[in-house]
Image 1 (cartoon, rainbow, N blue to C red):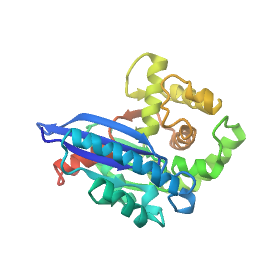
Image 2 (cartoon, rainbow, N blue to C red):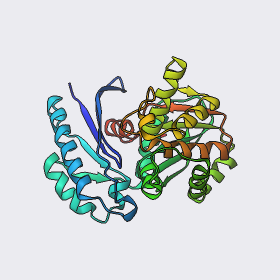
Image 3 (cartoon, one colour):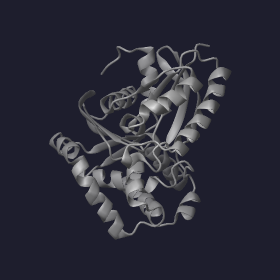
Image 4 (cartoon, helix red, strand yellow):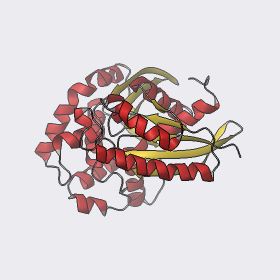
Length: 304
């Protein structure tokens, strides 16, 4: 089997996706996430700490074993916000690349948004106008889609790890603290929200970590696996997450251990966008950067 693989060296997790294509359709063979926290204790100072580098090395060594098992010859390695903004990125790459035997491509914000958009557009959603939102540890990608074509895209360097590093709240989020954080978010998202309003966007398609968690929490509450989440359900999930301690949050059914500390900040980002745009429909898309990169490997010319 001719397997292809993408390794996403993210700000919070390193993620491996191995897949193949049949009749042009992506078939996922194996995927795994490793908690690395590359941006911990350094992201807002544009540096990757020695401890984070060590965690990254351990994760990459484990990833090599999986790639060898599936006999993947030419995996691609993509780095995002933490690496593209780190003053010591070149040093980190010199440490990581001998382990993997391949070069690492540091994506620009525009490239990251484009690959996310490719993954979502490949799902052929029926909605006329919608906003794709991907909340990462370092950045938030927003892509405005109108009639199946990208109208606007942005990569905003205000991801969940940056907020955690700034506010250092991991337990209960008071109403006052939540308001303070949302006020901090306002200028970062102002341009995106204005463009989405102009295009009368009322549908939001969320991808990747935070939305995977929202989907899983909703599934436990409703005993269903639907990708659509109602506003009332999302607000209930936000309350559940923001009103408890870190330990209590880790015990919520459906909560990912990889995101327990970061997920409250994802809630506040999404709630800010939802309220500003009066979003009526929220969809959780299972595909994001990794899938977009695999699709791009298969057919680089495929564009919407």
